[in-house]
Amino acid sequence: MTAGGYFGRALIVDVSTGTSDTMTLPDDVLRAYIGGAGLGAWLMHRLAPPRTDPLAPGAPLAYVFSPLVGTPLTTSAKFAVVAKSPLTGLLTDALASSHFAIAGKLTGYDAIVITGACPAPSALLIDENGPRLTTAADLTGLTAAQAAATLRERLGRGWRVAAIGPAGERGVRYATISHDGRHAGRGGLGAVLGAKNLKAIAVRAAAKVATADPDTVLAQARDLRARSFGPATAKYRELGTLANLLAFNAISTLPTRNFQAATFDGAPALAAEDLAAEDLADRDLAARDVEARDVEARDVMARDAMALRKVARHSCASCTIGCEHIYRARSGQTARVEYENVFALGPMCGVSDPDAVLAASARCDDLGLDTISAGGTIAWAMECAERGLIDAPWLRFGDAGALNRAITEIGTRTGLGDLLAEGSRRAAEQVGQGSEEFAPHVKGLELPGYEPRTLHAMALGLAVNTRGADHNRSGAYEADLSGDLDRLDGGAAHVAAAVETEDRAAVMDSLILCKFLRGVFNDPYTEWAGLLSAVTGWPVDGAELRRTARRIVLAKRVYNLREGWRPADDWLPGRLLAEPVRLASGREAELTPERLRAMIDGYYAARGLDEQGRPDEAQLADLRLS
Ligand code: SF4
Image (cartoon, rainbow, N blue to C red; front, side, top):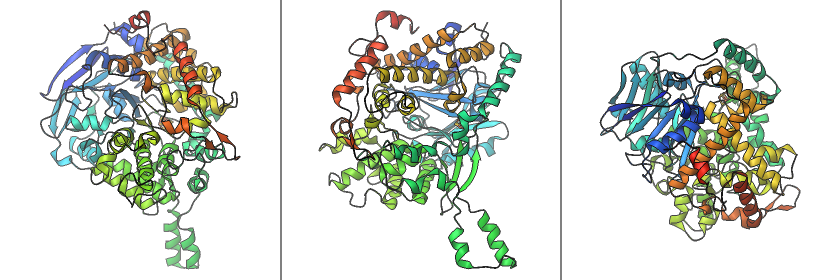
């Protein structure tokens, strides 16, 4: 009998032929990997042919749901999209939330795996009649939002849509897949879908799934909901993650102009605290000097009252936190604002004009581009241009027009964009001349907005993570920022923090629960085990979940080993190890290669790996891969 919360099967669709198959997911595998990113790693081991080009028809892409999807537990309407990344050549798993999670799972499967490539632009539909393909020729060239809206209108009620933008169609290696505006963002999954000639996937619920102990799940949901309104999530509700920007600037961990500095003079102009309160019409109103009693003036004031920079706060499906803060540029474009997109398109590129950063972010959404990789690659190109390594005199740090031109060229693969669409690692390999040393990536994935030289636990987390430079699979920065250890002096405590936060992320990404909920758990593994037990009926405890976390992290590493990972890939860009960075205090901070090497050795030892980062036979046997 299948455990509660599961269907015990995956749907495998070959879009070359339109045929499909069902794969049984054994109970012991589900318990060992849970769902989401964990189960996705196991599926890739089983279904992805070794050493396949990520953009080849034979490379599978999987939507992987979890046992918590469809329950009333807050933030649980999530899924993982898993594939071999065209950016890194290694495993990638990007999480997103939307009603797509619930409708997709209730098609009757714990995972939907897509292989092959359609002979013509198509959309994949899955409902009670099973999977089938339909033409998407008329959707080609549309933004993801336009394509999703068109398809939903055509299909009618109940359908939920995942779609790619023009960047995915053109094989930009960091293209995203959008789900009601929430992107499976990192690693180029949009390019994988585009290579399959799939513009969209539409799903409609066709089945029901029961939990093992509905009364307990309901009580847990009420408790979590109440806790989600507490102080642990206040930052996300009130200002969102952009609240990090000024704080990171103050402690010299805001990567600026391609990691040439860790503080940014223009940071205050981009700060959430000011942007949230800014009235775009203030100056106009003052200049008009109108009488409020005048009818025409009242109309003007009414219209301008609508002109606040911040226009809305939204939530993902099934979320009681609501961290999505929507802002408007003076041009009228709106964009979801998070620390990472503002960092990448602002300080990283030296741009301090909030209107330009918001417009750039909206443009990335329209084209379907990962903002972190777009910003990192453009910042690298700006530095190349200023050093005369590439012929692009128009591309300069701080030039908002250049930033937006570069984004458009990337999304359309025109001009310089054809090179930059390859990501900073491949672009630097082509340009050479030492530009590899300041290409801001690990394993091909561009760095997020955390300065490794001033956050040593995070430096380790970024270096060893299987997805590449990534702040969602390693939360080691929390230890750096906690004040409990010296963030400028990496050692054993930093290693322990990197391992622990990576393990916790592995469980949350597999259950799946939103990371922004993590602060409400006092005894995380025990509480997560309680949730999983109530949903599935398994007698899971915290100790088992700790072992599960280590298994999932290891399964990802072993997949990468199979695909050609080398020990040298667990490392940081040359600049970060060769150049000190100036702190706001005037002192300098550095991360030496020797210190990073010692932390990586400690990490391998803590994970039971040999000096080359490889597991032993007993660890491999536990992975249930054969
Ligand atoms: S906290 Fe934010 S990211 Fe997380 S589920 Fe809620 S709205 Fe989505």
